[in-house]
Length: 310
Image (cartoon, rainbow, N blue to C red; front, side, top):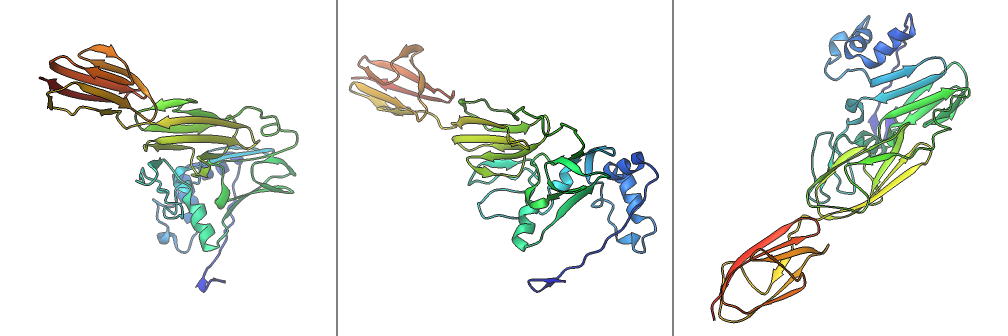
């Protein structure tokens, strides 16, 4: 068929397995997967071993339950995209615009969506599926690559299995604390006891459950699981040193010096020649050498030395 003038081809193969453990090995072990897909193939030499790897890092599978955790290599395909200036490379590629470093972005879904292509993963169990974080239709559950769970965990269960329905535990966000103030880059991860649906930073979904934030600013991070339990953390990164006004480093003055201090997130302390002083305004009148150290609430420090010699 053709999509927007470009020809696309599809094919399918059926693989048979003697037992469930053999099937699990096919889904999770690279060597087993490669041997199976190349066996009896008329074009075995066309399969690149490095790119044809098992799709899941782990699988729970029986007649009533399927839980598959997709490998990073599956989630990180299609590294180019997007209209909001975000880095979406599977490598640690930081953008100057956002200071966001993604440790595994599912950009392939967004890339396919732009091309108008629908890519889906489907699982069929022997009896009707009663719970899934994908779309349920009878015995099958389907997940679109455009909207995969951010932790890559696909779940489908039958009967009265309460894996999803009984989940009341919200996700856990690590690396930052609510109302935290940091002077360095932070590495943020989100985890859930069942499945992390999405992680949003300042309202934008970055399609990953782990990334590093390096740019100064205010952030709101919200993690939501498949049962709509949510955790929200608000924090700030402040890498800027406090501002000292009224004197300059290395200068000599023949008059009184009036100094003021400011910082966007507030001043923690001011020390002049090792002694604590007011964090708002200081007037120096005596002759001598002065060393001023100002620390903001994030821990950034500014220092200057100057002289008064009237």
